Image 1 (tube, helix red, strand yellow):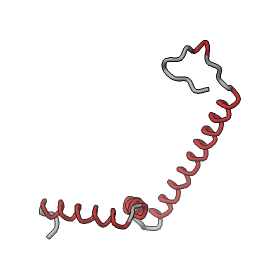
Image 2: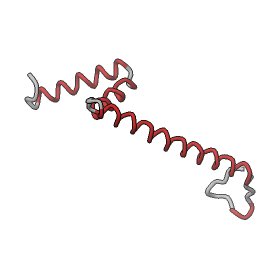
Image 3: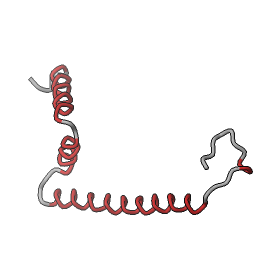
Image 4: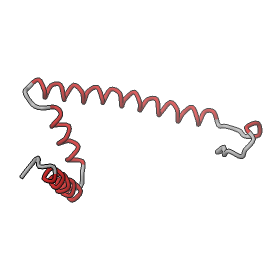
Amino acid sequence: MLLTLGQNMDSATVNASHLRSFIERIEKLEEEKKVIAEDIKEVYSEAKGTGFDAKIIRKIVSMRKMDREKRREEEEILDLYLTALGMIE
């Protein structure tokens, strides 16, 4: 049963085991996410330790997630803005 704002809490039944199952799954995934985030941080540190710029690597990872057309559009706008500010010719 799904509670809505207009319902009386006393008359509503909650399937506790179903709710607990959702919460436990979310908690497990949150823990896994924390471990993965730590692993990613370690990889960036390793890359930095071998002479790579971690900030630039983060940017590349972000760009690779983008659709090619969206990335091209952003690059054009960035170039336009940088040119307008006299930062590139």
